[in-house]
Length: 173
View 1: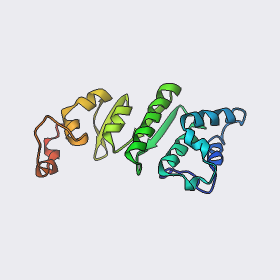
View 2: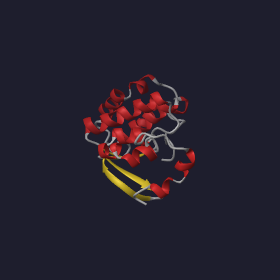
View 3: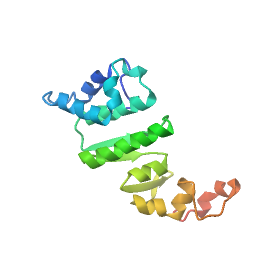
């Protein structure tokens, strides 16, 4: 769903039950407890989901996805609009979901640094085309990726004027 995609006029519990609507209801309670283990703040919230903070809404959206027992979750900009502290928390949870539950996660993220640190494998896209891919560690250590996406580089400080013409220097274009 667009944005965080929670149903604001429903409670946290109702939103989570909505995520499991295609499954038999036999283990929904157990799955809800598993979601609360990953997102303990959600268990404390009893009001309408529209009154949750942005980070809590993001956690609820991820929790609702987990209720469907997926093998793959597609995430589009999970850090959008969140404070740096919540971004770190959400990405730590994303890594745990992948590691603990074996869920594959396709993550589209502008924050390349956080995305590559959470990923096993990454793709760099430019103008809608994949221009570079590989293990996340090799992308993090790639000098061009450091310069253009991670805010680093080989050392010397470049002027903004030079950065505006970066497309000419990119080896992959």
